[in-house]
Length: 269
Image 1 (cartoon, helix red, strand yellow):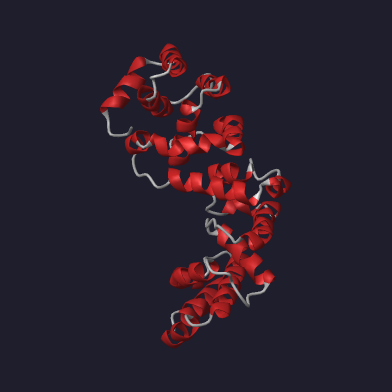
Image 2 (cartoon, helix red, strand yellow):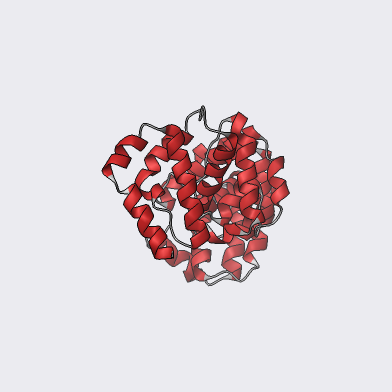
């Protein structure tokens, strides 16, 4: 049955006449996306409408979505989230978007999506698919700022370039929601990634002692050599302050020096 359903979708959405007609139909684009993903989700395969029409879906969902029902908006967000796509909804649609996030958590489906734990935590404060009600505490303007931060982090392709452009991260120090979220959960999502790198830059730029304590506590967690290299490369570039010098000194005291020094000779940093 699964193969038959998949083949039917491939046949329908690969039809040139269908393609010519659907591209003019905003309502139809959303309805086919929802129907395709619903059938695919229930039968454990990838819906075939999205791969061929994701540009059209994104175009429609970036508009005011006039004439599209609230239920269809909500379901479109719901299935987009399963595909790992985070949106900047209009403020009047924000509650529908949050409802879609909460639904993903409630049915435990976040374990089967492409949404990363660091994105979910930084945007919504969600850890381990818990605290779904907490997402409703995220104000719209705060969400937009948090989304900008994640977008900035992921706009880089190398860590050295991210560190070099650290001034671009400075304005986010004024976002207490973001800074507090990083302080309270950095160890939860810590790994070698650009979201972690951006968060680490804020901890190093922040003059508050709590930010340094977060990193000192992380040093006690039996880090791998790769993670030590990752931290060391950032500490090296931010050792202008006494507090950051102490972070580097503490890292040296707890781990082999070559884990930090050799890292500087590679292209990983």
